[in-house]
Length: 279
Image 1 (cartoon, rainbow, N blue to C red):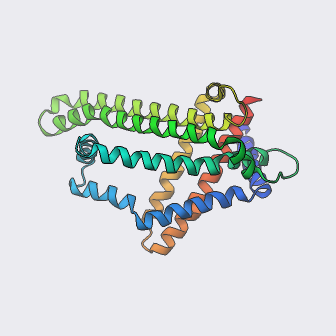
Image 2: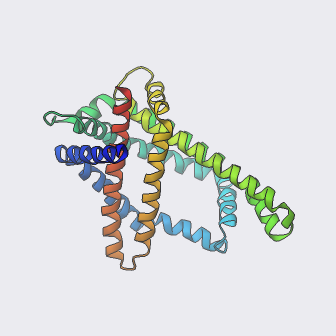
Image 3: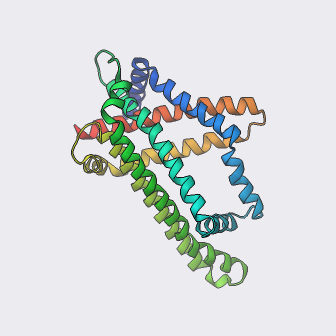
């Protein structure tokens, strides 16, 4: 009964915030539409699928092929320059949109009249702060992804050997795979949750916002892990359905609507979690 009441309160708060600030939906909608247009001309997913097809559709070979491509010394300069340019552009976009968005989301969850000029105030007050934060987040995210991909190699090798040549190693391979999955899940959970709370805490304090965000997350850590896991399942399920749609127009339209609603709700959920646990 308590969980149903909390869910109902959450839905009511989200609807109230969106009604108070329609820009919360509009901003996400524009970002998602821009991403879809970009993907239309630079098909990232098609490139990933192409790598998988080149390796015969084997996920193990695909991971090894990507690792080889990333760690090849001949490709390293181009990869580093490309990553730096993308990081700077991404940080600029985040710094322009996110501070004002979080201010609007926070005020939207409060009672009282609508405030004007929050996006402009967010840029004026938090642009440089969020720019530096995002550069660090991107760098740490790249390091984490490379680390996690490298950490999968022992499990991949052991699994392949146990399947093809040494069935007696299957138990050990399963154990290593379980440990690997656990490490990946824990790493991504800690990184994503602390990053989310760090950004939101940056609006609440000038000194040590990461420390405040970590404290807030730690108070109900497993609650937010479960909440984000539910979001992950909904996201994966939604896009599985979208990819099964054959009509391209309907696929893009439904994907745009779903992604806009999903990320709007996720953002408000995170801000509400922070506000509930800081008070």
